[in-house]
Length: 254
Image 1 (tube, helix red, strand yellow):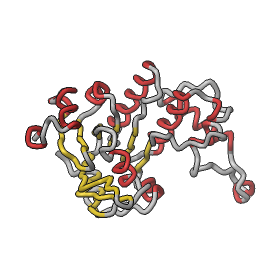
Image 2 (image 1 turned 180 degrees about the vertical axis):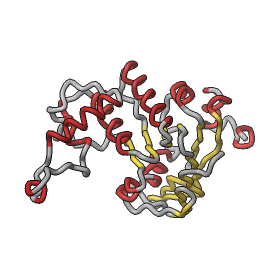
Image 3 (image 1 turned 60 degrees about the vertical axis):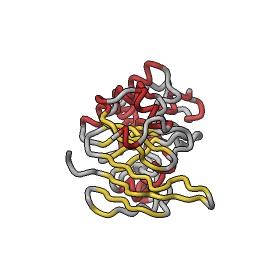
Image 4 (image 1 turned 90 degrees about the vertical axis):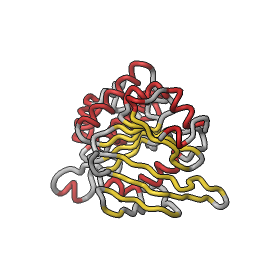
């Protein structure tokens, strides 16, 4: 297998006396879908926050494209082409979908108006509409606040925004949780399309059949540590659940 794109080794993260990560390791390769699974409290969200610059680990090491990596903020991750769809979506409810798509990347009008910070809303709406169409986000309108959209449409906006800007890797924390069957399949198709373009996709999901459907590999976290790794084509829902719950030991998984 090729060199890892992103690798975490023995990460620890403590919040006071609570140890969220206890030596967690994780690996993502270019052009693959790797699912990160684990029971509630396993440390998945904390690990993703450490890998995307939202949190800084207490200990351990990170490498990116083989070089040591320190992420002091999400902007550091974005500069490397790393984007994240968080479980809480991290969207601005009072802004419309186009403004959310370009949040922090606003397009300014050319010339003097741009010098004074005037936004080119027409250009942002046009490009946002193209992105939403490309990634299968069907919206009733791109001119209304996000708060006026359904939960599924908000999720679609968050997914489309992240995959539109990710050039190296995208984390997706439960991206289909609020979606219906049709929208879920569209998101899974987007995941495959992004992978086929050479971007690594890290999927965090509790839906085991979905994990096996879309993933190339699966890594299992339990009690703040990686306890097993599988090729998706060589495992089963029962085996994944066994690794998550401790019924299947690390030695058995290996």
